Length: 373
Image (spheres, rainbow, N blue to C red):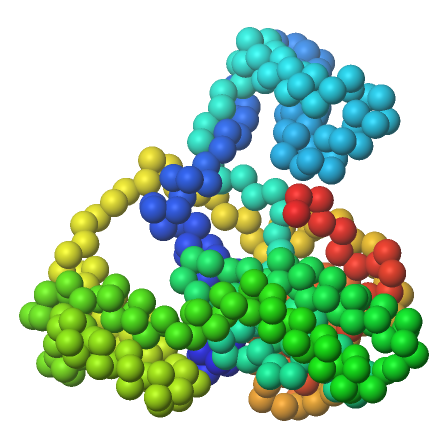
């Protein structure tokens, strides 16, 4: 979030760049139907009939395939009696595909197919978790307490939130039984319970071992591969003695003070780029993915619109809100004269703008209705 505020980039463009990376695109490919040429010598009525039939069949196949990817939607079709089982849906899908090929000459090509678009601002627990996740008789869970595990490829927010919520519910039930909602009886009990959470243990282990993991990961970097600016750091990484000393010193210095030193543009961008240019090799994809526009992505989502906005802009002329025009993943914000205004209907409730808005989730049963996760 800090780096995006410093250099605003449209979030979906970052995703698009990732999808176009051959290392990624090869794992997110699917089949898409391509229409065959209609016989120009056929009667006009026959050409129209074929065109209509092909359009209808592709639509039916595409919709059924999308349903097949959604556990909830498959269960709904079986429950409504439209299909006897999930396997029967798969059989029908295969049958439609065969008809499309044999009857209408439709071919299938490789491309990227995006079922559903979403966005989420994930709190980095090692940076922003609350030391005491309560205030008076209010308990904070999950994102609200800044509790999320975010290190490398491991991102856990939902699991942490569920675990916190169970512990909060137990603490509230205990307070109800006793009729005692004081900080000492409710808040501190909940805080102690959170400390016993396996996710808290994980976060503390990450805090303790983060620098060691970082140094160990780079200890074999050839010393001539990066500029002299990083020479001392590389030397430290390549020495077991110095590495152990650095880890010990890190524990004394404190984790929070180390983060600005470790997590920098040099660390995450410049050094990896130099390594890639020296050691990397070119990789090509077997196809070029077709990336949907943000308008197409939002159009596919299912909303139950709320008549009143769940977000109120508090500082329409602030620099932060002006950056939200770029940073909102669904382009809900726009400039009008000198201020920023919101069109809340396309919101996916990511929370990116919450710092300077009156932000809350839509009323019950309103807002985005996700089908695939």
